[in-house]
View 1 (tube, rainbow, N blue to C red):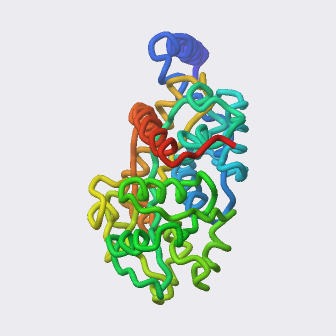
View 2: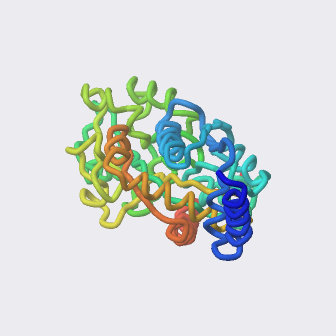
Length: 330
């Protein structure tokens, strides 16, 4: 390279570098992001379906952004511990939150002392997927349909109970919604997790349960418990022969756990847009859809704007359900 040519080349490169921020600030910011690893905080323990979906999302982001995306499990308080960690983080796009229905909507109605402001401490990034729950009965319960279960419960007022994994959990609220819609009176036995609930259901100590599909799938297939209906608007990938509660008994019934990605409030809009586009594109891919359905999840791609509208609508809907159930913040 001659001296004259090298000087012209350097001047041209310098001019281009100064011009870029003024001509295309969003593109410039995106070119500079990310410079290092991204942390995806999950408010739940490793091993469950939420953890699996968070890791699938992280892997696709890694490939798209060409940087490491680390899933950081911070379980506790229905996801609130992890969410609070992200709410206090620097809004630079390097700490994100993988949340669920509870952290975005219902926890604020269940927990008296929320460690973050649901509406103001986060900016929505993208919807990812929904996960249905399933209504179960012990094999000896003489009810093979939801209508038969409702009739059975009504014939024994105050006698029957059901199990759900956590007071105020998605499974508890899904059953309370069903009670409201059908008029049956059945008392909740709250469990701290699915493991003890499963033991008691298999032993017949509780006759009815509302819980996640994956935990009980082997026992549904063996006939030890009977699945009467799933809580999603469409049939669950793992249980294609089990009707939805909407089609079997309560038209319009919908009580899924939906999963999403959010960032701390004041994260630059161009970074939010970039992340939103990449996540939505990943969820729409054939590979991601196949993997999601293989673990019992239903793909639910949605942009930042769509997630914001979804949170708003779900907040109104679930507030009514919580009030009808008589639940008070604790």
